[in-house]
Image (cartoon, rainbow, N blue to C red; front, top):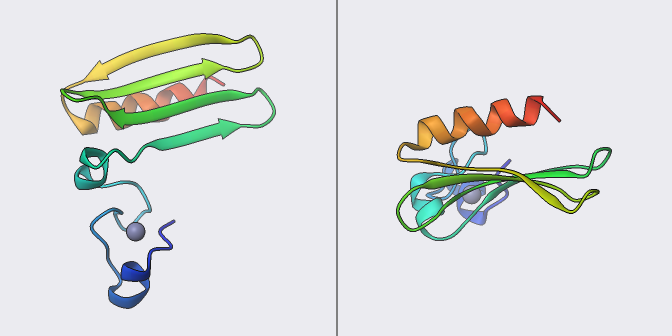
Length: 88
Ligand SMILES: [Zn+2]
């Protein structure tokens, strides 16, 4: 969720959507969405990579990268991000 001052004051902020996810503006500013699963130590992130949205997943226990996919549309990247979390 968003804890920004701006959000507390106005009920909205330019970095976060209502559900707490990042806006396009936030991605353009270099913000990343990151999910780390303590049990499996699988780390998944979604970010804007200069020309496209990228989803990267690492297995920190094995020390290897599981996937690296790029998307033109944020919608598709989010979908993939969600899907890839299901498999961990
Ligand atoms: Zn915010």
